[in-house]
Length: 282
Image (cartoon, rainbow, N blue to C red):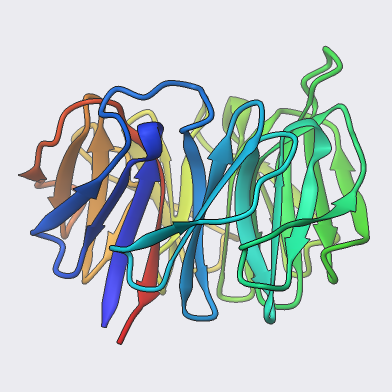
């Protein structure tokens, strides 16, 4: 059965099996940029892995999206995670890049300190890509990749900072500041273009990419060309069950099947959420 899990501030974990009825777990409803902040979530090998933190890493693991167990920690926050076969790989603050061979219950150091924050991570099963920016005052965009979780290679160190990355249809797509969009078929060589302005979020809905920037949305199946669609000011952060979801702050959940007509399906209030993932449970 498919389950959509969304994570965020105050250890918020919001889940649904039908896109209409939502279950909320949290430590505090009004979390901030602290050690209870979940920054990213992934699903692989039958488990959800949520990561985050601030001065130290925060990891929680679930096999059903409802019951969670505390996992491994590290000496900086983690921005996202992905899998390489049975191995989980995560990256985050100060260049922290770690891996786990026990389902994210413990993490081993895969790479050393960098003046870099990795904000988002994605993989295709054989390559993991981490995107972010430098912290040395230049705020340049950074992309690095690994095929084993221990040895990382920097692929891009220039231009605007990155905050989001997705994979689908054989293509990696990363979105950065100032309308920057870069694409790659292998995580090694990247092509650059500009789409809109500002920052944004890119997701893959199973068929096409959806890029949101300030209430404007573009879609593409290949990321080679994009189509702008009407959104009525919503930014899409998740796709599930034939619908798209936008999350407001204070936390609200809005649903649409066409990007134009939106309905509110939940209104928990409190702090917002950061990332969503679809997983499959018995």
